[in-house]
Image 1 (cartoon, rainbow, N blue to C red):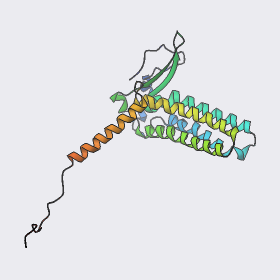
Image 2: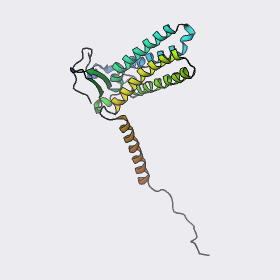
Image 3: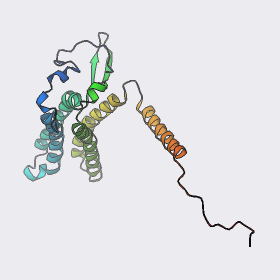
Image 4: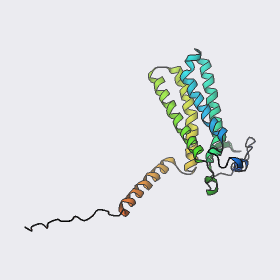
Length: 220
């Protein structure tokens, strides 16, 4: 587990990693080991998108729509950052301020073999799909609001993009390692894939058969 030595926070009731001890053994063979966490991981962010798209059907008040969307966005940000990340994929990012007033960002990853073997692949896939697809939707809403000159809605969309992008960036940093720059990680990934493809080509057996019944050149 990659972590930093940090002071114990008052709201950190479950130390990172000890949530494994709270797993229900009866769910070990089920498709989803954290069904409620998985549900709320998608519910809050999905509800914010649905309310933004169809709020005009139920109310003409911009303030009411704004408040409801922001409430669901805030609930989604807190849930993804503090609960679903640590339980579904073993990742956590957070910030603290030391005694000198300096802000520190911490990106933790519980990447031990014993933990990874217990990660539910269905929940892991849902976690990353929800984390990546929702910012894409908000990006489309941003373009629609921008080119439609709906500037009051543009502010709401920018808030949604900021909250969704913060969680996405934080968990990508956790996944690739806190001490590794994302550009470097992407470059290393491309280099690894190119090297792998080159080795596959070089080590691939030659299955082509030599031609038969070919008359030598110059022979009548």
